[in-house]
Image (cartoon, rainbow, N blue to C red; front, top):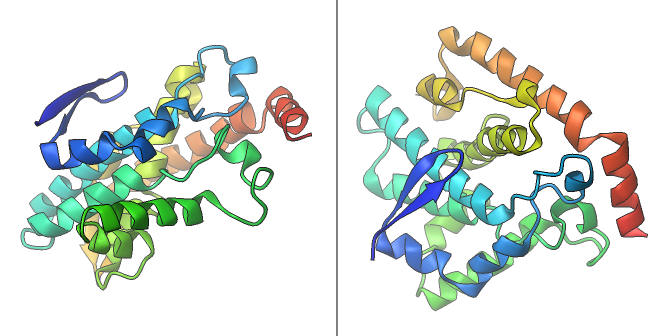
Length: 233
């Protein structure tokens, strides 16, 4: 059945029954146990959020992005294309392992979470009789419409827009908070590529500054890195 999932960051996330079926799989449910910020909770006690909530947040923002693009350029984003982007966003982090990036090359040598995500998406695709084929094409940048891939993976994608806002909230680092709604409203398509309107330049500058501050104050905090290195050893 269709669902409404209550999220701390984005409030109500509407999930149709076809997508809820994917969320209910064991492959997706395991993300509840995967820390979004690995060892950051040792410095920021409230930073215990997981990849499950982040994936739902990215899914929500992907919906907002496709709606915004269709409003700016009617006919550019078909309902079928939009749903493919939603599915790719929902599953983009499904391959993350324990403590996310901290143990990515420790538990399994030379295997990235992106390659594991692709393997799990392909397995789900077999179980769903090919319904994820085009979503996988977007995830692997093999879809003819390049801007669909850029919505999922680029310097200004739904992944970054969610994790910066979510991580800033749970760590209490207000400098990292971004205005994702403003950035999404500035999206446009030109020559098959994802672009932003000129009036969105200041918002992008704020986004880049916020990302830089989050790296220095949270992701690269000396105590966080120390804890990660102890964990790896």
